[in-house]
Amino acid sequence: MAELSPFRDLFPGETAADQSADRIVDMHVHFDEKKPGFLDDLLRLADRMNLTACLLTPFAHRRVVADAAKQHPRQIVPFGFVDLDAPDVVRQVEELHSLGFRGLGELEFVKKPYNDPSYFPVYELANRYGWLVLFHTGIVLRKNFDEPEDVASGRMRPIHLEEIARRFPKVTVVGAHCGNPEYEWAAEIARWNPNVFFDLSGSTLTKMRGRLAEFQRIFWWSALDFSVKTPDNDPSAFVKLVFGSDSDLSGVESVTNQYRALFDACDVPARTRKMIMGGTLTKLLGLPE
Image 1 (cartoon, one colour):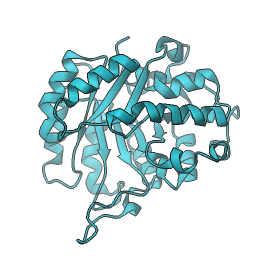
Image 2 (cartoon, helix red, strand yellow; image 1 turned 180 degrees about the horizontal axis):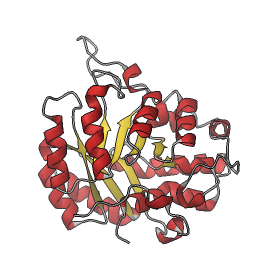
Image 3 (cartoon, rainbow, N blue to C red; image 1 turned 60 degrees about the vertical axis):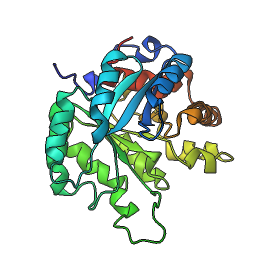
């Protein structure tokens, strides 16, 4: 199938926020392989909330999710999880593309920093396909407390995404968790790179719930002209955010309320709110209305 441009000139002259109405596009929904009936539950939630889920799918489950996405294109957009250090990762990415996947994510637990040249063949494919790629950024959970792990949050810092965005300009780079706690680095990288966005999933909106207005200091450049394209030419710095829940299905609605509390605390304009909650991703992914 023909590839869509990942930016489509960032929609100049179009009103993506209006066209998407009140649709929510969730950049960060993990396929729960341990929960029976997960896809049915997701479809019910999607219908109730007018939600489209970018479904982050382990490679082993690629076919069931690809089939579900073909049957329900308005509710499910398939994204493939791959291990960047796997010896056959390039072949996996090529297969995901052949199945109709729209990007990769959530990439995490890497053995080297994200910008290590050994990962470039994957990014080159994503660049060729015009894909969105979701990277974990910032502090990462610890799975095993009594066993040694080859895991380090420093390999997943938001600063590493800058080089990827510059080297591979047709990739839409999305950083999960806004680099928690390196929010300022994340914001500044997004400010200068039209193909970089971040979500605020994870613990951030919980730990900062009493001081959400501080994000006005981090996303500080609203209405200032840096000659960098933004979705729909939106002047708000907050337009560099997209919605991501990173929760189980029962928690998605709660995360939407956390985002809205942030919007209120930071006086985010109504049009920008719509872009964050779905308008930007609707256009970048060319989602059906």
